[in-house]
Image (cartoon, rainbow, N blue to C red; front, side):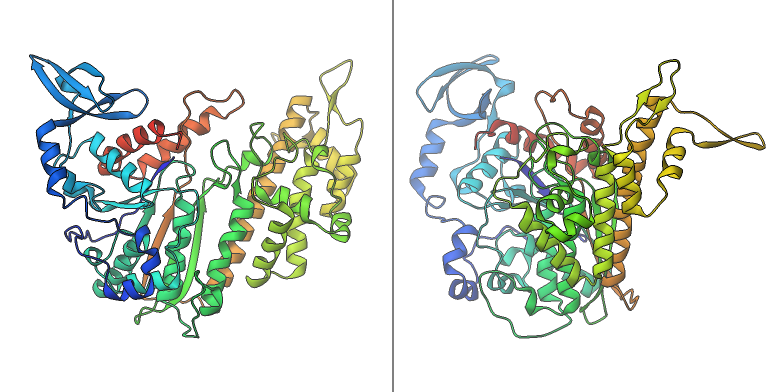
Amino acid sequence: MRIADRFETDPPITDPPITDDLPKMAADSASDDSKFLRQDDDFKNSGVGQADWSAKKMVWIPSEKEGFEAASIKEEKGDDVLVELANGRKATVNKDDIQKMNPPKFSKVEDMAALTCLNEASVLHNLKERYFSSLIYTYSGLFCVVVNPYKMLPIYSEKIIQIYKGKKRHEVPPHIYSITDNAYRNMMQEREDQSILCTGESGAGKTENTKKVIQYLAVVASSHKGSKKDTGAVSVTSSGELEKQLLQANPILEAFGNAKTIKNDNSSRFGKFIKLNFDVTGFLVGANIDTYLLEKSRCIRQAKIERAFHIFYYMVAGAKDQLKEELLLEDFGAYRFLVAGHVEVPGQEDDQMFIETLEAMEIMGFSEDERTGMMKVVSTVLQLGNIKFNKERNNEQATMPDNTAAQKVCHLQGINVTDFTRSVLTPRIKVGREVVQKAQTKEQADFAIEALAKAMYERLFRWILARVNKTLDKAKRKGASFLGILDIAGFEIFEELPRDYHGTVALCKPLCTFSSGTTTELALCKPLCTFSSGTSSV
């Protein structure tokens, strides 16, 4: 189990935790789904549970396997405390290692700021208990903590959206929709721009919850009021053209910017800030996406069980015969830059994903020539990895004994193969006022090819982003206010780093994440990381 997306909105909302039932409108429209939003309060209100807790003097003690275990105090001798665990085993622990346990009435509390005993053990236990009850959203003061269930829950339909529309935070159960709606209402009422921050470990659900924010606003702030049919999920046909395009921008960016990593099958390898613009009446009038920190090195090098960016696999697996011939595509094993060949993602068909990516591009207004040109760049990057250099016998100068891959690169890009090989093997450099040709070593030539591949892919990604932004804001309407969503690239926590894993990336990603946050975030991260490592078997 991985923990922790946190969402923050300004100004802070200080409503008390909810204690009543779901609104009556929710009971009629989503009664079957309410168990995924709010718990049964029978045990919380039980006097028997409260009396049992008081009599046993229940506390939390450290546990190597579970993080913390429940125990009852039997005897205290100075700094040593004798406790009895649930299995009847007795142990002696230092009193400084003991953490107080909350009364049963705080079981599965919806806002952890309301806990009487606010400590690591209580926070982790509350998140764990709610998770096992399929309650994945929990407030922690200004933040909303999300535990990724790794399955679809029926809490994102249009009926659920209507439950949260216009409701204050204390009127409905914790949900990303509530955070989004409050940010939207604050923007409208106070005429101040708002931002939602999504951060956490890779695989925690940041990108998926970012999609839910956009999905909610595409319905609530739609500039097109068409007919809406509830089919259990929000249909893009119920929104206007802008909303459709906004929802379809994600599949394109994910295809070119996401990859399978050791811990996450669809990990965002870049960060993005999505800026949604609204007019004075609250309608969505435009959008703009900024990206940063694209992990461009992934297109040339990956750990053995990881993948390069999805689009490489989509294209090779899904291109039809005519397109495959035009792009000079080969089998997965023929490409050096695809380190492990065709690494499959469970439950995902790469050929079908290629079709869906092309359909998303069509909705976004990409022409057929533009789509083909993009694929040519992707194929060129793969072919660059197949160019091999040797050393000359008498010196260190690099040679290219077989220029087949270079010919394919030049054919795809429409350039002269002789000029290309000369620029790689003997590039022109300026020395003083003169320009001379300098022979490259094998290492220098290899480095140049890899640098060219990374630069081409990065520029393609930037071009795609500019093209998407052009479609999302054709009229250049800046709007009266904006709501921003920051989706930070996730970091991965390893007990032991894989031998071929990028150590620098492992260090810099969490550093970047934490530097964008606040002291409150850092304080919250510590217990969440403990819970994540302590319940990895879930």
